[in-house]
Amino acid sequence: MAASLPVFYSCLKCPAYCCTYPQIPVEKRDIRRLAKRFGISEEKARKKFTKKGEERGTRVLRHREDAIFDSACMFLDPDSRGCTIYEHRPTPCREYPGTVRCGYYDFLASERTRQEDDDLVITAWVADL
Ligand code: SF4
Ligand code: SF4
Image 1: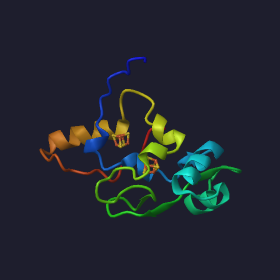
Image 2: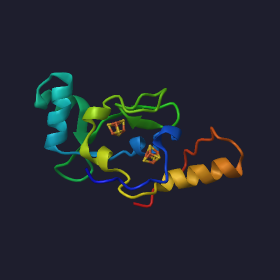
Image 3: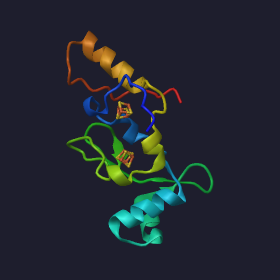
């Protein structure tokens, strides 16, 4: 097994900002995984958990209201800020952020240090995608 690189962010100390992105794309294989997880048909999973994406022909995860951010992925636990389908989460969630640093976490950590508040949450931040 290849050794994984160290990362400079901690999702456990973050309010799951990346789970609030409005367009989290899902492919057929992701929908198949969700269908298996919930024991329902792929068609049902597609309708229940995804909606049309902004880009033609794409599907994205559905959202629901969130107490910290305006809305977040429907699978985000609003209290623990963890993914409720972690083992079955879609591929983009597995691959994010794709580098050893997370821009949001860098900003959050630096503001927490600067403001001397370990629980500080930054809600207004624009990802440099
Ligand atoms: S925004 Fe960054 S630190 Fe926060 S949960 Fe997502 S990947 Fe982890
Ligand atoms: S499926 Fe899980 S990891 Fe992916 S956006 Fe939703 S809550 Fe976050």
